[in-house]
Image: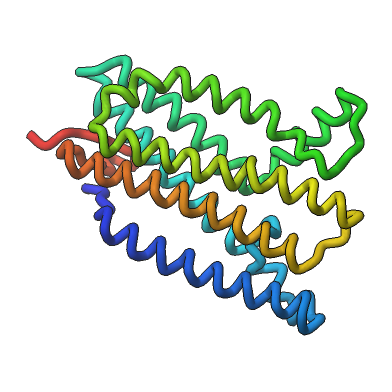
Length: 238
């Protein structure tokens, strides 16, 4: 049974979902900091983009997992004709699978506490998890460089831009927000809440662009994903 997602369908759905999440998040921020209703019958914790273990978290993890699935498919499709390329797709598949699990489990927060404890830092605003994650990101980037150079120019640059957008949100604005929250004495305000919306939006946009780029690459190369006998099978049309 063939498994196929059209790139334009994915992009349209992803943009609509993201737009809805942003509107709901802004409404929740308005309710919290302007109207003084931070709970709203339990709806706000379920839909704030900055909160954990809620609807936006699940959707973000699902999107990252979709990227991992596509990367795994590409690894399988190129195994017989381009081993270096296949290995790079495979490494990226593992990385994105970990990111999806991290999104659901907030493992990076445990890393943040562990790094802080090892360095004798108790500053909860420092976002120390970024340090080991940045090192891993640089290593994966170096290992994927040959793959990027083999890709078509548009695909290559779309992937680079997607990565920059995601990192800008996950690390850049995250660090700025942490320091800003520290200056507030740990008490969130409207400005900080809007920063978190920008952060999460950049992460979503980066991942949406990445998944869309993978789907476009699969379409352009004639690859197809198929589910055969309950397992994932990727092949080229005969």
